[in-house]
Image 1 (spheres, rainbow, N blue to C red):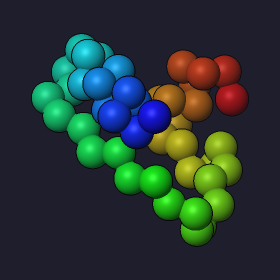
Image 2 (cartoon, rainbow, N blue to C red; image 1 turned 90 degrees about the vertical axis):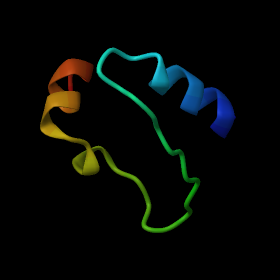
Image 3 (cartoon, rainbow, N blue to C red; image 1 turned 180 degrees about the vertical axis):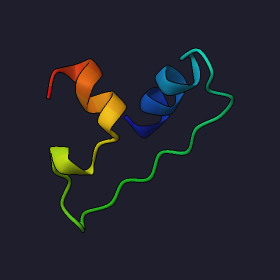
Image 4 (cartoon, rainbow, N blue to C red; image 1 turned 90 degrees about the horizontal axis):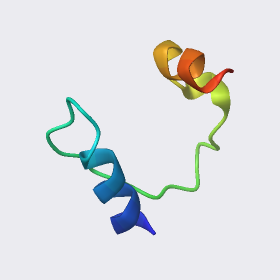
Length: 43
């Protein structure tokens, strides 16, 4: 799953490379998203 996420992100325009880390804490919430990503995703 992590490798697949890395591959998809690296296909995005402007992305040269990506690192995907799986962490359990702190818990993820939409508030942690970049404002540009929130707007794009409709949050």
